Length: 141
Image (cartoon, rainbow, N blue to C red; front, side):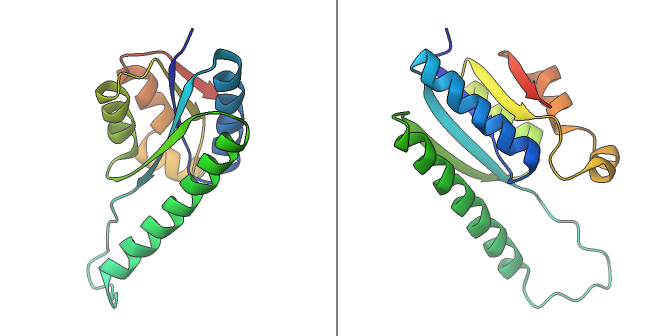
């Protein structure tokens, strides 16, 4: 049914559940699985001193790539073809862009990532993805 599945992962409990669900769906449907992790743009308060913003972004990228590589290894160890995508920017926008450009047939995403306060302040990524996606979105609770 779904030949190409995209799963968004960020290391949260909900994204871990989404990843497990995506693995099961990919196995059942003999689908290709792609994992995406989005490094968020930072808002630095005026007057805050940071030695190097590049170090912050490098650290975020390293953590994201490690998470993606672990997920790829887990998928491939179960016989699932997988690839990884680390991108930076607005999570919902980047997930939707990759899904559309890559002609994905399903997006799997956790209902929450960073927590309810940040979700309330920024708007729900999963909600935005479900509203703007060209393909079905499976939101895992």
